[in-house]
Length: 299
Image 1 (spheres, rainbow, N blue to C red):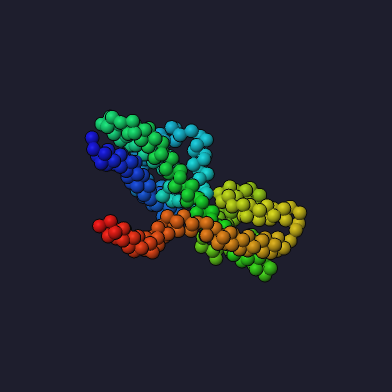
Image 2 (image 1 turned 90 degrees about the horizontal axis):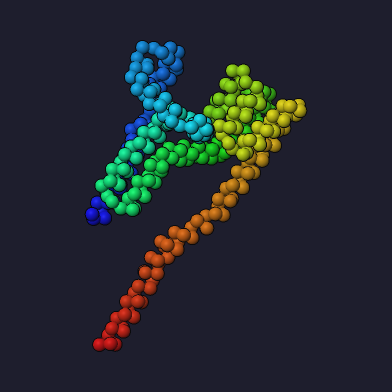
């Protein structure tokens, strides 16, 4: 069989699970309708709000039974660090992973049956595993991007909270004001933490849940300092002022570190892409003249 046909079949086999992911990962209409009803103050179980969800619920329950409990907790932690995207609830991610795995297994078994080759057999074995962990990689990437945004916003948010505390507000009121004025993931997490405290959790428990969802070392250090200040009666304004200055210093150091990494990162494209073109432009005419001279001399 021609190699191009093998490549085409392998590409189709790899694309089928991705197509299943793109179909299953769109926003859930039932969830959107329920959230819209809650925002309007209506009952989430209004007629029509959960119509057509029986088969989906059965698939999600089946996927949860197939997935180990420890792995389910790990996926839930990834979702929490990714901000729990509305189109990726936990049960839906588990069901999508199972569907992608079975689609990939089916397509790759068919490909291995049609094409008797060791390379195709290896692809058929590895491809389902890769497709199964692909949603995990996407969630982890989203969590890393969200963590970087929170780390970037932390210094400015602490400055706002410091100004609010020095103006006479309490720490919770300053946190609420910073969360209300902000628009990024850090503001959302501040509001979520205040809601947890209002629902009856202790400050320590709410802060620990906050750290579990975010996993930013600088924020962890700040909240530890706040917990200690609350326990020992230290003025929160002094803690905020010190932590804000430290966060600004660390942000400047990170920017300087990235600036110093630029020459190292430029070396590879410089050597592989730019220098060969310069050599061709500069040495090409000379090489052509040398070849022409030797050719003419030979004649």
